[in-house]
Length: 169
Image (tube, rainbow, N blue to C red):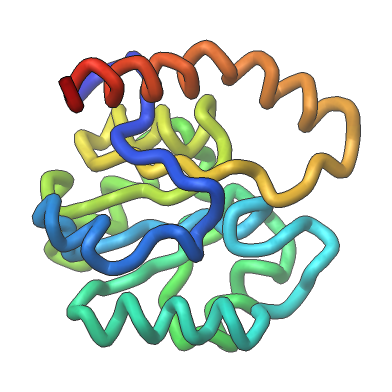
């Protein structure tokens, strides 16, 4: 467990994450964020492409679960449409709800990945749970606060890139 929120894996979007990204690391369970990770804030239903991506991961033996800070109906809507269990009001980065989900499902932190767009919520939650942190680029910047948050997260995104460059040598 670490408080240093540098992602283990970074990708431009969820579609760049094929099953091997997870299975090669021993990941069997994926906690997915919705807002700006699976879909922009303006989209209230999953797309066919998203459903195909979910099916591709599931056919590789991965179990998916929606873990969202959202308090509204989006988690339930996405969950129903994609056939995934969910928890809303997760209060990420605090790990309590994520740990509850792990206890309920029987997966260990070592075989779990948290996929999200925010360093200070999703990545930090993964770190505090002992899970693999997978960070994607935010889909859209709908307001100035999202853009400012992204700039505040930039040092951790750059630290990931620097760590990967060193490990490739």
